[in-house]
Length: 232
Image 1: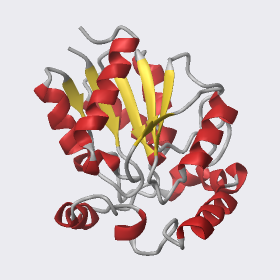
Image 2 (image 1 turned 60 degrees about the horizontal axis):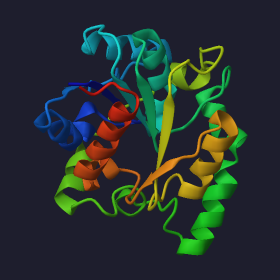
Image 3 (image 1 turned 30 degrees about the vertical axis):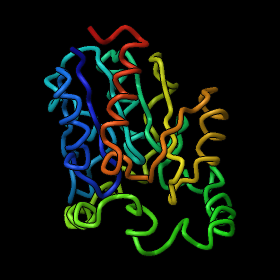
């Protein structure tokens, strides 16, 4: 059995992981997918990490997964928990001292998204989230997800420098989504190589692949656990 700590992205909730959580639990694993603090403009990334650790019972080891903005919190959790591995899914890979609000310009995201939009007829970055985020998610499920949006992250979390002095000493994997219309796969592959020296893995799906292909994603996470010896 492996413990998986699944951290949601900006504006999201732990519910976004419910299908992956069910798939992991069906295979005998332990899963924690907390709702990180929302509607509190003073909450920091450290507060998010504290909430995740408390929800997971302050255990040790396991696999910590951060989706999208969750990549700012997941390394903190992985470091403090002594995780066996850290997985960033369509993640906003930070650098020490970088403010999340500066990440967009520092990474060249805007130009990368515009270039991809020119290739796909404006699908990337489309103002309709059903097109840009949930295009391969069943409509009712996508609408359910949209109804759960919250005020997260806070202005405090966005404006403060990322608190780690270096990347944690934890094996790190990056998974990009081949159909991602928010963070183009090619952009995230380059970021993974540049910032972490990691060759990203790929899953066929949208930015919200946890909802569109949960079984496939669960298998990939179990493969990570087995690769680092965390699965029994």
